[in-house]
Image (cartoon, rainbow, N blue to C red):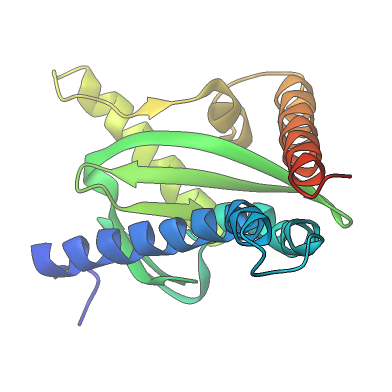
Length: 199
């Protein structure tokens, strides 16, 4: 099926798959709480929350990656379709609602993706050069249409800079804030796991 003939049923299924994937990752992150409850009941060893917590740190990597585009992908004049970890998603470029830049960090350095959401609730993490160019043209078109009273998508400043639609001194502020947010989140999670395991 071409990307121009996306049915409402397919869109709804994509949204449901995305929500299930996110729900599984969140449940994975909450495993130490379940381990703590079972350890308190004497059903598991006391160190279980710590072991589960270290394993669950993978969830911090998986959560933003769930919607990231993977090859192969298809483009049409009005849609951006790509495979993700939770299945195929197709974003309607004529009905974008939000575009924001998400920056995560790992041993390889910073990783950026443009998180795009359309009016149907479908989200896609755009990373490839070809998709970024397509998204940029869609945002420019939406801004032209906004002059005629058609609602334009909300595009964050960092996303505008990343798309080359706004001047700026790079993305230093966004990158620092993203790093601090991720570092604090992981630190709080680890300290909570350590408390649950009695360390």
